[in-house]
Amino acid sequence: MPLVDLKDMLRHARAHGYAVGAYGAVGSNFVAAIVAGAEAAHAPVIVSFAESHFAHYDFPALIAAAQSTARRARVPVALFLDHGSGMDSAVAAIRHGCNGVMVDASHLPFDDNVAATRAVADMAHGAGVPVEGALGYVPGVEGEDAERHPGEMRPTSPGEAAIYVDATGVDFLAVSVGTVHGRLRGEPRLDLDRLAAIADAVGVPLVIHGGTGLSDEQYGALTARGVAKINYYTALSDLAAAAASNALADVEAGYTAAIDALRAAVADEVARTCAVFGAAGRADALLPACRHA
Ligand SMILES: [Zn+2]
Image (cartoon, rainbow, N blue to C red; front, side):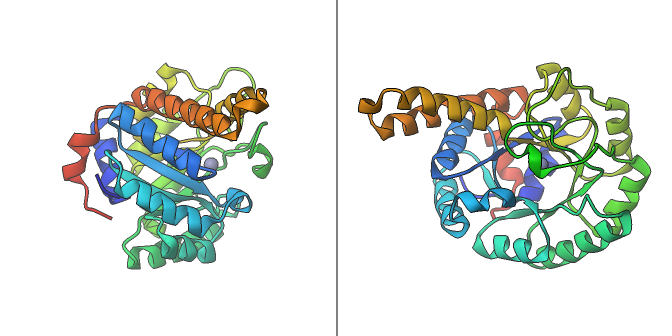
C-alpha cells in the first residue's frame, strides 16, 4: 500500500470515530518498527518526525528511507513533520518528502499564531500538503522532550478554535484538553466537555499531543469526540530504551541484538495502541478513501 494523502486519512478516521497513531521516529529502526507494528494491526499509520529530534539523525536521509519503507508497506502510511518551527522547516520538510506538516506557533499570542500558521498553510496547500495548527498549549512534565515544552498548560478555547481554523485554513487542529508532553505525574484529567465543544465548533479532525499514559477508556473518550490523530512517542522511547539496554547487557550478543529488541518492543507497542485507538483493521477500508500522496 502506498503513501496516502493525510487529509483523506484523517477525515476517514474522524468520520468513523477512530484515531490514527502518529508515532515519533528517531531513526530508521523506529520507522521500520512503526510500520511493522501497523502492518501487524492492519492499521493506517503516521510516522512522525519532530523537528526537536533533528540533531539525532540526518532528516533528509531518514525521510527518503521512510518514503521507501512507506511505499512497500502493507498499510496506508503518511509521513509528518511534528512541531515545525515555522516556514523554513515546513518548506524543507515538504521538499524532502513529508506529506503533512505541523506549524507550532501555539506559544505566540493568538493573532501572531494565526498569522504564522496562515502563511505556512498557504504555502503547504500550494504544494498539496495538509497542515496541522495548534491552539492552546500542551506543556511538558518530565521525560524525554518534556523540557522542550516549558510553562503552564493553556486550554484551547472552543470559540477561539472556530475563529482560528477559519482564519488559518488549517486541516487539523491540535488542542490542549489536559494531556502533557512527556510522562504524566499522577492521574491524567481530561476536559472532555471542552473537547466536545471544540469538536462542535470546528469541522476539522482534532489532534492530541502527549498521547502517552492515558487509560484505554480515555483514548476511547477522545476518539468519540473528534480526535483523529494521537501523537505517541514517550512510551515508545521508554520501551525502546529498556529493550535495548537489556539486550546490551550481554555484550557478546552483539549490537544487532539490541536493534532487534528495540524493533520488537516498538512494533508491539504500535500494534497494541493501534487497537486501543480503534485504527486496527481499518487499512483495507481506508485505502479507497485516500488519494495517493
Ligand atoms: Zn507534541
